[in-house]
Image (cartoon, rainbow, N blue to C red; front, side):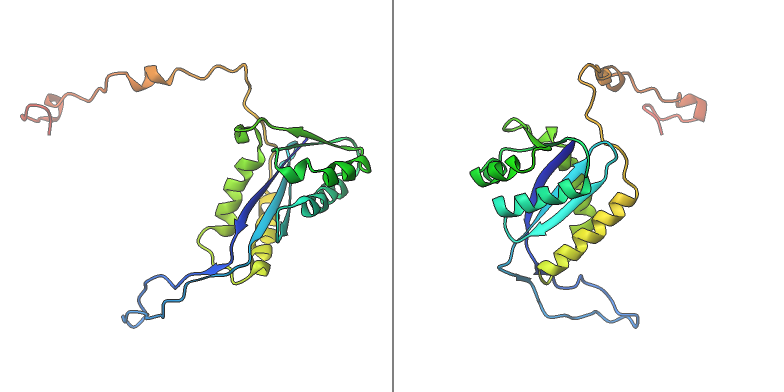
Length: 200
């Protein structure tokens, strides 16, 4: 089982350096240099649930052609057995060209999640980790920089990957309300020698 999704668009942009001081105690001055380019990059991701391994691919658009290229990468990385892809109902996932492509790749099957239930796709949780590892606080001059950051973060995260699981639907959550409503007990103020009513 593989959970797949797209992240983006990720837009190349640069930020001015953060305010700082030089080693000799002077304020570092820099011209305001913020830019946001017209290029957009989409990151395709597929999480293999059983071992936590991830496949990512960057593309300039989110369409059927790139989705089919991504499905081919998934198939190449998983050479045996049936492949169930858990994904959302994006038009490129169910387009005529994608359905035609899937007819030539009978091992791949889609399991579409219900509308408004993105939390069922474990790839969404992986994106949260990925954003921190690859994108947070970084400037990208062009799509190649985004592709490099994506490849590096994916490699690092795969090196410490673990299986992903959905919560057990039969598991009843603990009654945290009882813990939160217990009275707060503090050692008596008299034991500490405090004469102020209400404590010291």
